[in-house]
Image (cartoon, rainbow, N blue to C red; front, top):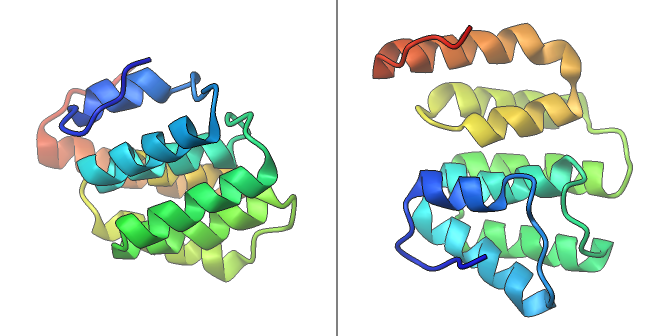
Length: 147
């Protein structure tokens, strides 16, 4: 898969969604950096792949990818996602306040679809709240509702 700075967000997400598999640590790190260079949502897609278990990289490498996200895209939503992803990666219960902080950051964002995916990895009971947020984004962007 060819990842490069300047990719469109949708192109990047499509390239790594369910396909976050690279041959070297350097390629994983580069994917995280490319996501960070594109948008919050693209950076959060890297986080989602880690949170959902979609990254076959080892724990230490995945923790390093979280450091890249926090350092290279230190926006409120990415910084709120990192502790949630870290807990999931370590197999620990995610503190409720971390999940709610991420949910609030998603609510304040206008396009953090991947962030909501991370919220749901942490707490599926927030499905209705996440759906409500997505509905508000669809309405704001005039995106037709999927059936």
